[in-house]
Length: 550
Image 1 (tube, one colour):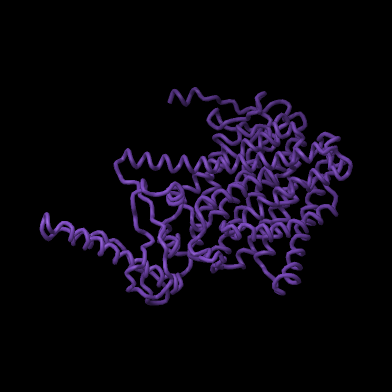
Image 2: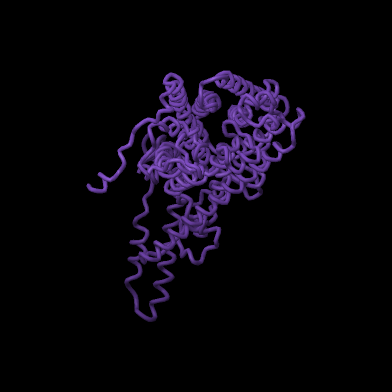
């Protein structure tokens, strides 16, 4: 109790914050009400993602997207807000070294509560972007761990470098109004790194390299999620002026208008290209992604560019989204939500666009260096160079940070297993033949376990980060979340039962081989029961009745 009494009880408000009470109140209200709208993006991401993935993983997707917001809040309070400094929505209590308030130092001062809330929802958005790249195969505990690392340690440093007056990217002249680079390239790069580490979904690519389409839960939910995100994006971009005084509300309205123009141009371009040059049909998923790509691209520049420039940017972003997605599948990188194409590549496009098309008058109104404007309008190439440097720094720092965090997770898990004396096992990545012959004893079990010491480095990484093969076959909802959000299809049940039958046969063969090897030395007995005991824990799924169940 004495330690509690020693904590500071200073919850006063400084004089400067109350000098103009109306202006201060309006600024705080502006940040808080817009933060609530931006937080609604979590619901939009949930609907978008759960609509695209296989219905057998719907509950798992919802669980991750809900939980990451909770983890980010704690991480942002502990470390993120302090590391971000004044770049976190202009927090006022940042010290001379650029750092702000850390939660363990006594909590967030009341004067910075609104800045904390507003910057928090931006951090949450960054983290949730990563979810799309690792959907349907990353373990929950790994994803939550990476959410904490990404928000509190990675994103917070990028914010300080880019959005504080003395950040090293800001010193170079780097401009990113609302986060095409700081938010979206960070989240998109984390999604790319995660997708490469956990590998593609089971049977996503054929032996000949063709991409196999998966069943989706509901494009109705995806369309709803896309519109929810577009709605929240108005506040995401518009509120980034941070204050309501002077010309800032006019700049906010200008940013929102450009946001609408880029969004619309991207969507119309996608529909036109799909109908005229692709399939003569209207593709809803690519239209949704193109709209989001237009929003991502204009986020950095919406306050700095002309209306016509925003329309042109939306047109190009639709092209980048479409062909960026194809580029990833060409190299067999499985990104279920096209998170890197939408957020990563368009984040780069939008950031570079500032260096090309930023208007001197708008840069000046924002209080930035008036000599730092678009090179196509006579500005110095310094800004364009700073934009490229910023993209490179964010990409490589985020990518390497996710790799290091995953390596640390796998190493810690291995050490804990060795200290506890339990074997560190990973699941063997065997091939599965999609035939109907349940008596084929040559079929390789996809859940056979072996010592991790004999696995390659890639196997150790992948299998420690990835859900079990059972979860991929019958769904993470069935294995990890106490039942499915939707009923299993008969094909999913059939495939799952075939896998279990294969496991039983392999265990029986191993037991028989071990029994034969020990017969000469120990005589018969004792081994047969091991097979029954080892295989007895395998549950089969019933297909009788209206739906599949245990």
